[in-house]
Image 1: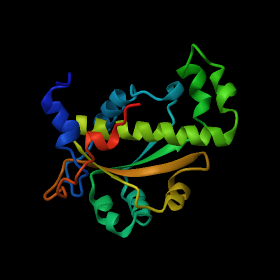
Image 2: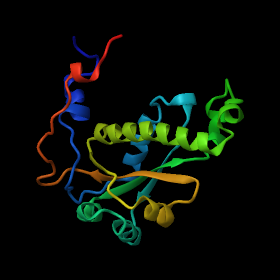
Image 3: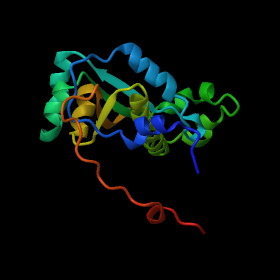
Image 4: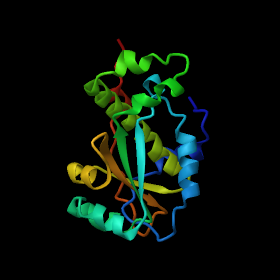
Amino acid sequence: MSLALDPAAQDLLFREARTANTFTDEPVTDEQVQAIYDLVKYGPTAFNQTPLRITLVRSPEARERLVKHMAEGNQPKTASAPLVAILSADNEFHEELPSLLPHFPQAKDMFFAERPVRESAALLNAALQAAYFIVGVRAAGLAAGPMTGLDFDGVQKEFLDDDHTPLMVVNIGKPGEDAWFPRSPRLAYEDVVTTV
């Protein structure tokens, strides 16, 4: 069975793509990031929620503030990547639902009036959007280095507020020399899929 997506695109997005650990110094432009977002914003979420928020870390001062919150092994690559993005979940995403879900505006209050429910929904759907974002970075011909080895509380206090929960930090750029570890194994279809 063949897929509708061209094999070269499949390779670009999945089979040949890996987490990059080194990058060239070629800049990543705001136009590239906007093109990535303008593509991945169409990825599905529950109730068309859009809780993902992206904080681009561009200034040297902000980069220095971020690096100190990264795990030791993630500090050098975060310090040297052309662009770093902090991906977070907006726990007040429901305020946008009436415009994002015009055929069911009452969903805002019907399902998301309680903060714990919103936090759970925000984490799940922002994680989906973060995955779309990483694939979008690859679609732009760039490499992504997503990391969760960081001080989440420190990143939240340094860059966000109490309404935003950090999910991960993503280094972005053209892959540098020796950017990849060898491909790690994946589970086989029969190890993952069950038919009932």
